[in-house]
Amino acid sequence: MDRSSGRSRAVTRFAWRFLVNRETKYESVAAVFRLVLSLGLFVALVTLIAWAFKAELTRFGVWFVARFGTAGMAAGSFLADGIHFPIPPQFYLLTGIAGGRRPSTVVLAVLAGSELGGLTAFSLARFVGRAEWTRRWLAAPSELLRGMIARQGHMGLVVAMLLPISYSLLCMASGAMRLPYRAYGVLALMRVPRLLLSYLVIALAWR
Image (cartoon, rainbow, N blue to C red; front, side, top):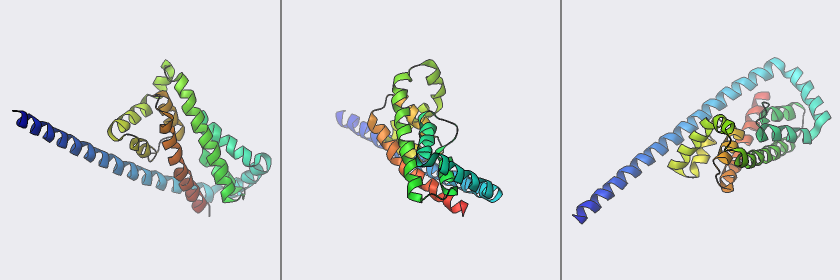
């Protein structure tokens, strides 16, 4: 009887692991597919904008860089990812490129502002995450993260960063769920290749 029960539990564990691994694999493949699709749409959009408004954007980029400099790009990125300001960090990447700034300067400024903004969003959400309006606003990203973390642990955060979801919202949702700060560390680490890829796409489309 004990052997039969043990075998039954072993079969159940094997079946559960098989299903979880299969679902995890499918989820990861779907995330990569969505990333490729969103990048394709992003390239098309930036190319169209650069073709139609290159002269105007160049003048604006030169003005913005001359007026606000590197600090302006960093501050704008901080607001975008710190309080979910509607102008995303990619706008400041484009502005830096149009303004003729060095790639390393543009990327480091936007990355620094974005990372500090994400940390701010994560930390603030830990304090106000239990408010009713916060729970309603972050319901969708929180549910997504909760399911991914339940199935994949911290790898779920990595997969979430492959999805076309705002980095700011992911940081807020993680903070509202009161995840440990190492969860923000995963998001912050994945933010680096995501922004580098955005810069590469924008630079290629601009040229």
